[in-house]
Image 1 (cartoon, rainbow, N blue to C red):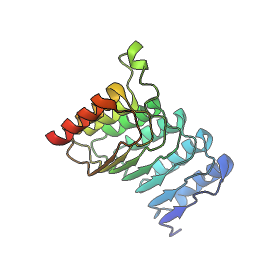
Image 2 (cartoon, rainbow, N blue to C red):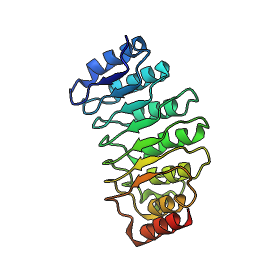
Image 3 (cartoon, one colour):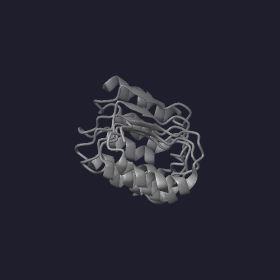
Image 4 (spheres, helix red, strand yellow):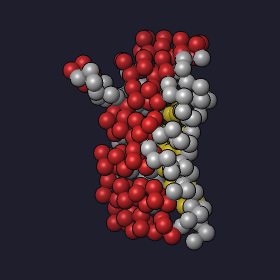
Length: 212
């Protein structure tokens, strides 16, 4: 097939058809953009789709927004994004039920990949930050915001666009993200709107932007 861009957004295909789609990805060697926004997909098919995308090896843009991305999907994304063979430059996960644990899971894998090309990441309208209080009883727990901050501080980070608006990022995670802005050398556009940064988080962002 000569298909380079496949958009199936808002079709409600569900997991059964999602699994069939995963099997056909190898028959589309020229595919570069895949949009599966709002299709009632869950881990039951998303894991197989991501595995198919991973074996495809040439995809540049992937949109899994408005699906139910849980632990299995996040693990599969981590394996895919952590591979040096991954060519993905744009990942969109709006309203995908991404939690702190799930976000941190795949962001750590991106950070570990010295050849990552990911430049655009949209994590808006998720539930990142809801587990902030777990740090009080388990200091080793890493929130999604803290994982993103760590990645932004690495020299290999090529991220130019980051949207984490409409989450619940606050406290230490907000301050970590603010501090990371003072070290990051790649970001060109950032949205932190509608979180809970508060005074200390806002100050950290301001200082980070002035420092950079």
